[in-house]
Image (spheres, rainbow, N blue to C red):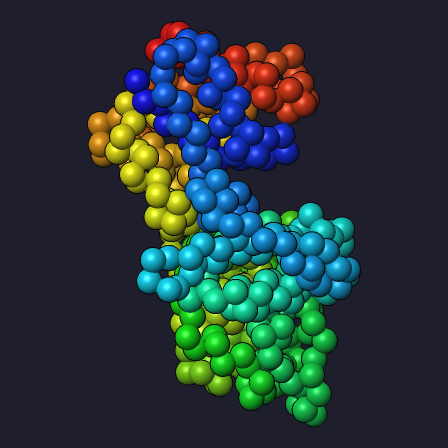
Length: 374
């Protein structure tokens, strides 16, 4: 029997690779002769880099400017292809993640994506011809302006002065100086993984929906939304491109600048990562799939990695088992996606805190139990 073990991360407790190892341990207790193929997955957000490295991409580390100017080390990955090109994988969370910043109103206005631009420059220096941008866990609401500033863009105010970094300054931008923009941007393809449909600004835009998670209070949300609205206007005046499109609100509006000033496309996060890592080939060879994540809920059903994987397996007639920290959807809802059995750690742990602290132990145990009962 070939068991494809392909979980996403269990946020706050296990990486996807650690989760896969624990699930494999539990599966082999029941089927010791099985071939347990560990294959961490992601949906284009945090964990995308880990999935790429697990699939054979070379991990690299660069010193960058963090979201509020403190320096930090940020990882990214690259793999050469057979035709002389190379694909790089960059996560916004690595250089410009919320984990690197206290979520306060002041920081929400100051936060920027400059470090992401430095990673892109490093990828270009390494010969990347295609760059995959994984969005998620970001600190900024700067419309990607900081990243392009690291690549030579100068946003200017009405007096011709360069405006400060951060989403809080975007409302002051009157024009763009693109004379210093890295010319290599015209020769590289950006594939931007998104799993939300929020536009750049407005009621469902980046600032109003995601700003509070980054520390923005009501006043900061208004300033950030006004800035992103103005940024879209300036980009449209400079390039003729409308960037207030579904998905452009991801990661603080990060896609907007690249949609305007580079060869960029927005793609489904799971499908993009699955294609990069060769998941389809592994899936086609499997007799059983075990997947999961920290919380399986309504958002999971909207296309997060485990359910997207279950849908793909269903199309091939391969049964799927889900093991999660908690499951907030019905068995019937899971069954409609091809899930034949499911288990949650909360049924085994003494408390939610216990489930988080000892997730690997309970994950192996839950896997064994659900396989014995399936």
